[in-house]
Image (tube, rainbow, N blue to C red; front, side, top):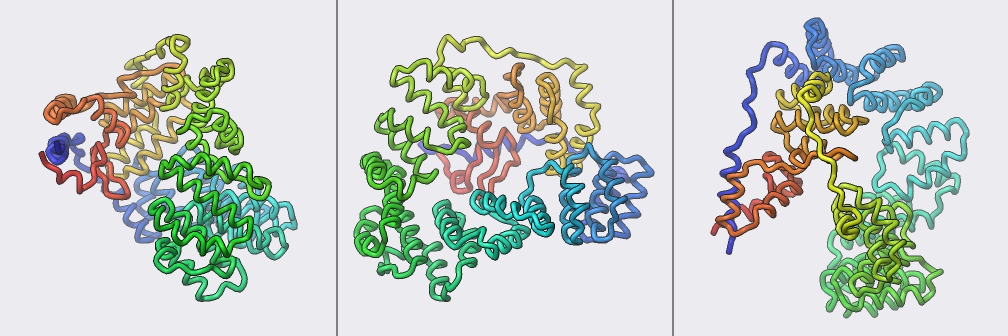
Length: 531
């Protein structure tokens, strides 16, 4: 039976958010200020800012913020400090510091840069690279050593990191082997734009090799259509990349060209290719995957250790065939940050439980069961009666809700949403709830619910630790429509609600980058299905 998604979407679209109130003159001035900022009309923007400030307009700080951004080149230290102090409790305060730090770096005013940097709390890789560049300018050679972590761990780099890498290469802190290692990892993780930048740091890369890079990364199937023996190191790395990709999609055809590729590889490259083939087998749910990983463990493991991606797929392969000892070893070999992910903590506990090592299992499951995520729920179910005490429910009082409503940050969030500045509204909200206790969070969630912002209400209520409110965390909006639709389509209404909550947090206006829309994030092609 085909599901009539289109009818469901049309009915839901009839439910609209509260109508926008008519704009007053100050609102018009504010929206005009935003247009002036986008058009970079600084003089007119300043006039509007002065006018709004004289009227004590709630959103005047945003206009001053736009004014400062347009005038950073002319801003002096005293101007920045005055602005930073006046608007320290707004969500853009740290962004302003970051932009000011970039300006100080541009001016090469490193002493002033580091004075501000000490007060900067955002994790901005662009600013971090500027700080390391500044330390290099002050003859701190350790900065280049610290830059290695950025080189290897960061997925993408802003342009402020390029001078850092230049200095590292010139001082042999970043070797050619480091560059080859990064190229391999970026290809493995499909970070192709970063891989292209890494490639540019290798010497003697010919135009034909660059073309082959483009061809193999854009169309890995080329390695099967036009198989040739790779001659250079770059060609071998690209061949391994392409074979690993194609082994996931078309293993029979990939097998045919393997001998030609393998004959050109050295021992280390062959082991890396075997690793990629094992990952592809696990991805295909091939029964041979586990034995392929086991072979890797017994054949010269000191030559090349399993990378993070391979360790994850080895663990999945072991789980699929219920090899609990191997699953434990695989998880224990993961980097600490990876081991701390809820999914791997849960499966490590399950492995211990299968081996009847209950004490070890419970030591993991008990704290995990207190976390409000999918694996926390699974851990709670594993613990059974041990964790059966229900979560303490709390309903915020009207006084608590009024207190939330009186906070300037929430007032600004509501006004920004009313004027169509949704991103800024959500930034205000997120900033406002930082550090709140459970009662304050639930009061804020109820305030969001009354605004019709179910996505915000759910995300806010999800943050509580001891006190919870399931009606705020798991609302049931549009109940009559959902139940009628579910009944007509022979679906469980709980499934429809669960999918809608997970996909969009009941945001009717939700749009994904690939075109999915609405509460259930239905693709246009699906909405055309009709029973």
